[in-house]
Length: 132
Image (cartoon, rainbow, N blue to C red; front, side, top):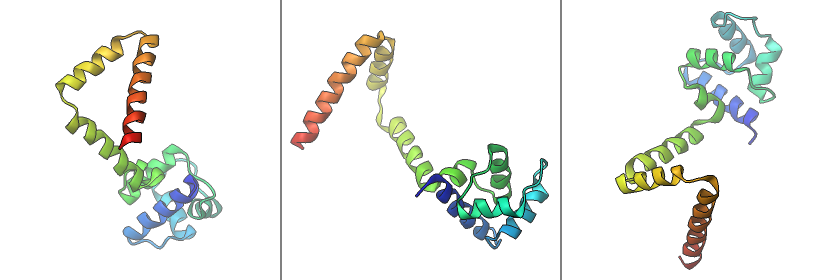
């Protein structure tokens, strides 16, 4: 699914969750009541709902505030945001002080040595995954 289509699906779902019909006329009216820039047209609202366009960031923020959803959830979808949070929590939960110290030492190395260390780690990873 393209990002534009995903945005359209998230927008429709958010509108329905707030009790609004996912129609261009409803979106145009409700958006323009809340946005203080140039109003959108019925055509623009239809393009957003059909997945033909994604609005600029300032308009995404207005939509997110109106629909009480995070802008990233609206643009990228809940699955992507949940995966990002899962990865962040893994780093927070599974990395101990020894690994953090090792990463600090790694970051202090010059670029050529960091590349060599990275190549060694990738080789170990590939060897481990082939045997597993």
